[in-house]
Image (cartoon, rainbow, N blue to C red; front, side, top):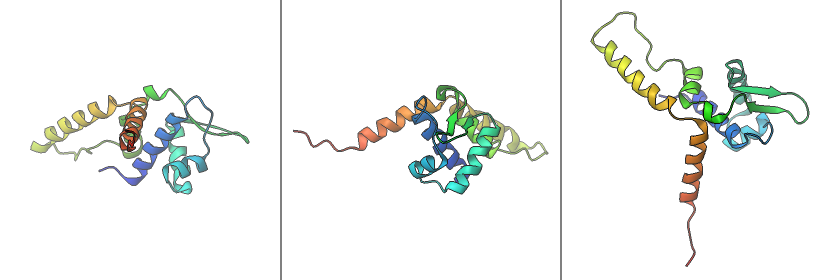
Length: 136
């Protein structure tokens, strides 16, 4: 299960992806765009910065930007940054351990093959599909 904090982190990175190359976004801009409580977002962006996913720019025109291209940041990286591993080892190897390891490897493969640039394209496609066409 993905926590609310992780969902917010993913939404923040997606918002920064949309603005990639157009300058920084303030916490307030991201919060309003993605409906994230600003104080919570501040802590999330600080964590993402400490883990090398974002950079902060000071000053009047400052804010946050991605620290590397969105096509090089995977969904899995952000999820692991916020949540840690999918399955925590219990210490004792048992019949379930190999199943958990296989499941984690499968999840990581899917999440690591999904970058934020492709997620942005998918979001745009979903938005276009949701717009009714009244043309005749």
